[in-house]
Image 1 (spheres, rainbow, N blue to C red):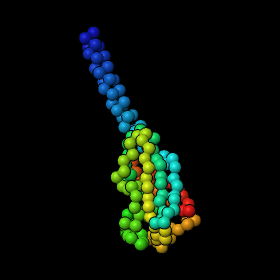
Image 2 (image 1 turned 135 degrees about the vertical axis):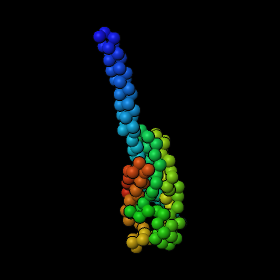
Image 3 (image 1 turned 180 degrees about the horizontal axis):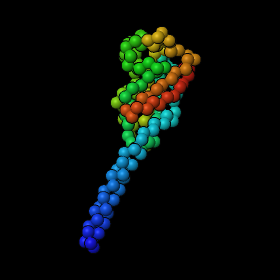
Image 4 (image 1 turned 120 degrees about the vertical axis):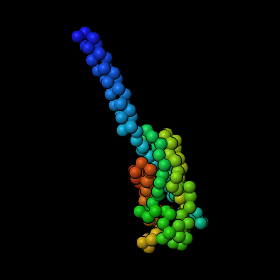
Length: 148
């Protein structure tokens, strides 16, 4: 009787430890998140066109990457941008940019004055430009700037 009680207690303790480790691992999976904060966004105009600069940082608990960038809802790589097609928008804010935890990044978009999106909307002085960064975690981060 005593031996069976000791065995049952030992098995129960072993199972409790296994469940505790399993729950600890489960909690770690569900508490990992990304959060990109756009700290600063502005646009400058020069002789060749506009330069939009975004400063952003990942303040979340896991690293992420950018998998798409849109301007006023149109992907920057869309071939309908004119003039220039998919090469109409330059800069380093593209897909594949990694966002490690806590590290500030500067993203730049360049485009000519009078650029038209596929709907025919013209990007010119006074227009509000909405920039959307979509991450591999499935989240969208928006900012808006007014073209000078």
